Image 1 (tube, rainbow, N blue to C red):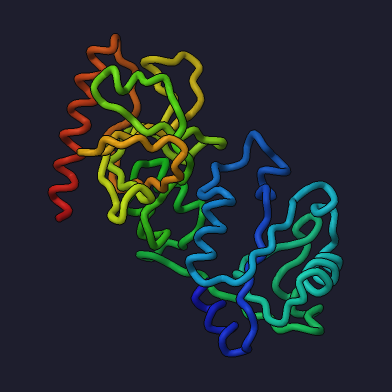
Image 2: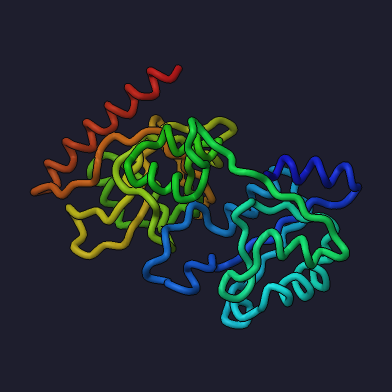
Length: 275
């Protein structure tokens, strides 16, 4: 979709732009029941920039925005505020109060701009959608998720100080706190970007650490192979390549250490098979 946008912008000699919402409308209407985000706003902005998008408009989705009629959304947001000349949407696009607006209505009111819609994109006969990606991640099928996304699923964030428990166990980890509940959990073979010119291999734990916490919040902990540098405060991107196992609770720290050692060995074996 972004590739088609860039192509059209070049043909029309217009800057390519994206309109996105924050928070997601489903988070606004049902915070507790909203599906996990596949990417935070910062990751979206970084991805758009890397793809060559010139402008990103972030609409704050609040009560006032949710109350806009489809006509008001077109006239106030698209025309007056953004000044669109050409719009690309999916064939299931809905907008305005009560999701009353659709592709036909958008075209009917497009007096000063043209509208193009993109049909369904399928991967192995399955519609490429956020729902399909979440299902693959929840099932631990990272290879399928990567096929649907066109890239490995990733989480980005800043490395924070932790309790140094991993270091005491012999496996120092980069701790990345999470603001939102992630769409997957478990132990994974990962690749980390942002610390060196080349991606670094490692093993990651994503979850609530049931062995050491009773009511822990989700956290991402990454043990990097053959790496010993101070990286607190650094922003990293962790790509999830292969799931090793589910998160488990162990009787004591010795049992946990043995399992971590086995996880590291298994992750190293995975990377050896990829070369």
